[in-house]
Length: 296
Ligand code: HBI
Ligand code: FE
View 1 (tube, helix red, strand yellow):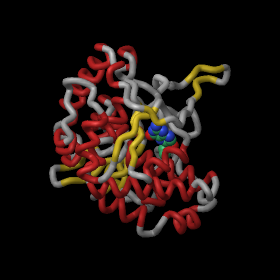
View 2: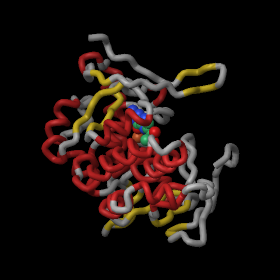
View 3: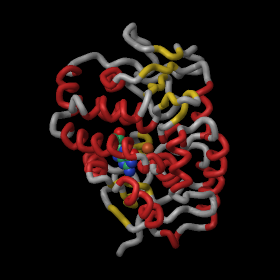
């Protein structure tokens, strides 16, 4: 078998562009260098510290239940034993970003694609694309939770369906993923907590999302979320807050996605930082530090 590649964004004459790959590979665990394990270890320890009292209980409990630790980069096979038992999900190793439909098909089949390679030491604080740390540390623990696991599968199935409906439903669905799976907050008895993997794998945003006065924090509404634009290169201007994973699952599965797209068809999209009259506002952001370039 060919050695897995490390597929990253590439600089071209049109700027920095994402490169897609569809291959599923074996995790080449023996190829990780001492630097790779050290990067994992540094990031793991740093986030563990920050996420106490910030990440939702389901994330923290399942992370230790799976046996993830700072000692070394985990072996997917070992994690899979826990995951398969808990929810029937399974990790598959990939070389980088997948095309949307391929990504949705994996989710629909309860397979979570995890990038096999980890960022370089000079990328510790920021990398544009998903790497091993983001995918594994950020996304995988919650796949142990049965309700969240069902949401992810339903999302994938919705995505496969949406890909036959055209670009608008796909954009709507991508926004839903962004504002829930990647940047979602959840209310709990102990207070507001993080469940979105994009936040959980970022030192700065873990603090910003919960404690900063700058962003909006708005109650989750599936159609509102699907209309809301976003940008990927700065902290979010708005976070959407769910009450429970059941709410997430219900909102996206009961109505099916079909009627929602029909209802949304042609509806104006909403700028990332906007607050609407119909919003349930937990915090109206001060807007401090918001970038105004670009269309969001
Ligand atoms: N591919 N490997 C990988 N990981 C992702 O998170 C991912 C992807 N391809 C597409 C994608 N995410 C997004 O389009 C989601 O919004 C669905
Ligand atoms: Fe992600």
